[in-house]
Image (cartoon, rainbow, N blue to C red; front, side, top):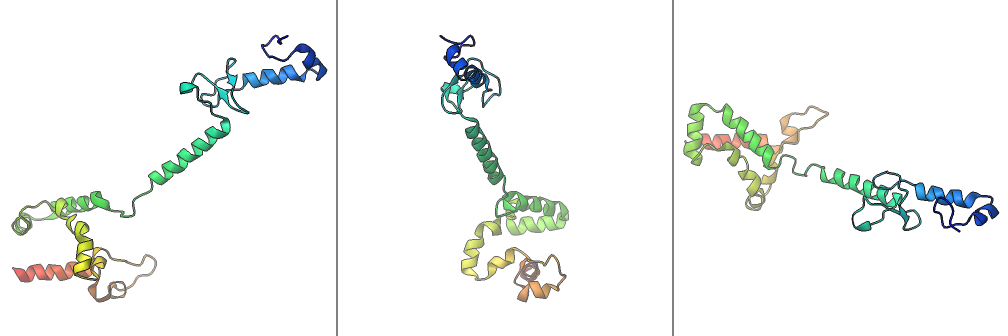
Length: 184
């Protein structure tokens, strides 16, 4: 005979076990859904700890353990997805520097850039060396170091100590500035 709360256990069986059977059955039926948190009287037991709830599409059951694993995995994936790229500046950073440089140019300098490059689109030009740095490295070995300066953070050093023989960005800027000046 079913118990009054709808449990399949009989009153006699519950009484033989000290009355604990019906109570345990009632507690199992009253557990909250692992997804929405609502208490379900109509939730059917689908596994050892999983309960089926109307909030799940297609009747998929998920245990609380499965939910915590899924949440942990989602957090880990979000952290990896939000990590900055290895190329910290990427295209946007180079374009921003080009915009700042264009705004700082005098009208005469803008005209000189337009004459030399065919336009004064410095944001576009700021990407050029980044796009060809692998080809440039093959043609001129050691030129990859021209893309940056490794300035020491903790100790102040003279530029000659971290930019040997002008083989860094600041050294090459001065060199190429002189080359452009001599070309005129």
